[in-house]
Amino acid sequence: MEETDLIHLSKPYVSERLELRSLKPADIDDAFLSWFQDEDLMRFYTNSRQTHTRESLLANINQGIAAGTSYVFAIVDRASQACIGTIKLGPINHDHKISDLVVLIGDRRFHGQGLAVDAIRLGNAIAFEEFGLRKLFGGMFETNQSSYKAYTRAGWVEEGRLKGHYLVDNQPVDRLLVACFNPAFFPEFA
Image (tube, rainbow, N blue to C red; front, side):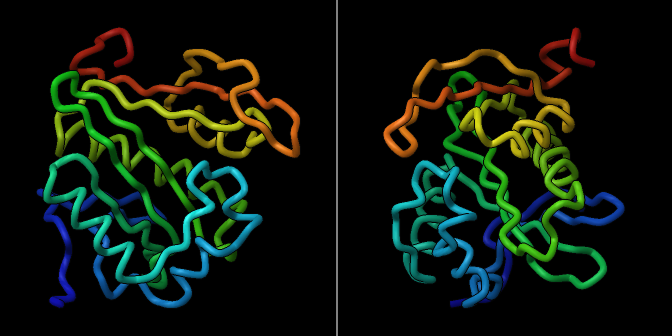
């Protein structure tokens, strides 16, 4: 398999500390795969009970690209050029020009530095500029306050709450619904 970008972006998406680029097959190494086996890291991911291999992840990513509904980007530390996490854009609903956007800073050495905020902002730009989406949405466990703070600091707003949506240790936990609006479609958010 060729070790090039899985999709092409029209321009670089960078902040002072990060770069978002297409995920390359070479990025999916043992360290990358270990993120999905880390129970503490995965405790807030609703699909965290899945077991991933390099082949299954690549197949899933390529299937999303082929369908035009899902894209995964590498979050790269500019100083070391290491892939430290991912952003998944999708599933994209092309009729309504909306999509979920999920961030994962998998490399624990980079936790607690505000990098998720930078990554989400770059993900917003890709979604709006490259894909022409009107709105991004997502949700998280109410108990995942670090995720909530990262999204809201990156320009997202809370849209609602699903009471008792999740069960954690047999206790109901609310799902917080957040969204980000493309100012080209929603001038009030410019």
